[in-house]
Image 1 (cartoon, rainbow, N blue to C red):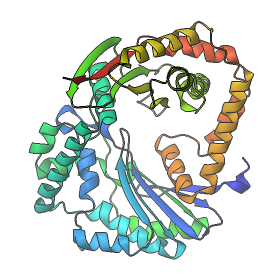
Image 2 (cartoon, rainbow, N blue to C red; image 1 turned 90 degrees about the vertical axis):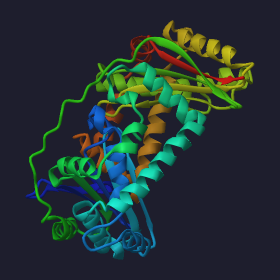
Image 3 (cartoon, rainbow, N blue to C red; image 1 turned 180 degrees about the horizontal axis):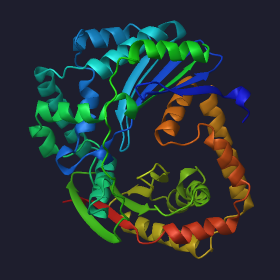
Length: 414
């Protein structure tokens, strides 16, 4: 990809805030503000605070009530969102270009001047506890939570991003504010902005609203990474129509080239509509509608999952089929050739083109590249590296990763 299709400038302000302006021929503006703190940064007695704070930044500032914030965001006539991951907390607004400055002002007020009203904390406590209950009812979500909880002994990945229900029920305002003041600081934050404006104009606009945000000493604790346990566990849940199987693998010791080979393997294994698992379980046997694999190469995460749902009568056959697919890949009985590599390369190029054409997607991509201290145009290096990956590399990484799975089965309790 040439820079003429991806024109950016990044600058670190005096207070440590990193700003990335991406110039694009568009009538829209998109802002993504990301704080480099997520569930992996929480101590045992802090589980769920990042997600709680994400909610609370909409609940009042020194000059705005929660109603004012909602109305001001709604008045932009675009879209706004917020989410918490294991590694970051993100707030975003996409609207017409003329709304850029007002959108920056609102975001700055929310992030810098939130007051955490006690009354609103109690309301959000109830909302988040309702999220826990929804998660229990969502069989897929519940299955992922269970495989993580049994697959890890000490890793923060063993906890849901929502945290621990007991902590959310009892956490004090003082605890929430203390965590906020520790991590929600400019020198732990990145802002990415896509617009048609000149980079200098965008950066000056950010300075106008964020330069008074006070820099602080950032103290982050070491994040524990842990290989998943090789274990099989069965859980039971009443009145579920679909039983599930989830396989969990971790891969903290791979090079970037090996991760790319793993992405090719994942595409062939369970990502595409013509994948090995899809054909074996759905097309050939007709025993599963919902089957896929997915990987996350984010720092400190590095996970590969296989998910399958099936009826009570078919769930054991589904597991046996998945086991056979994995065994046949590792033993090279399933062909992974240059055509598969070429197809993955094409899929990556399609994905990159889609990102570049979508202001919101591009803004989000750039934000996370910066939060992970990766090159903004790192995809160009990946595409180049793909040219050197051979089928043997894919088989090698399969042998490295596809062993010692954590396997969780969720079955209907009669």
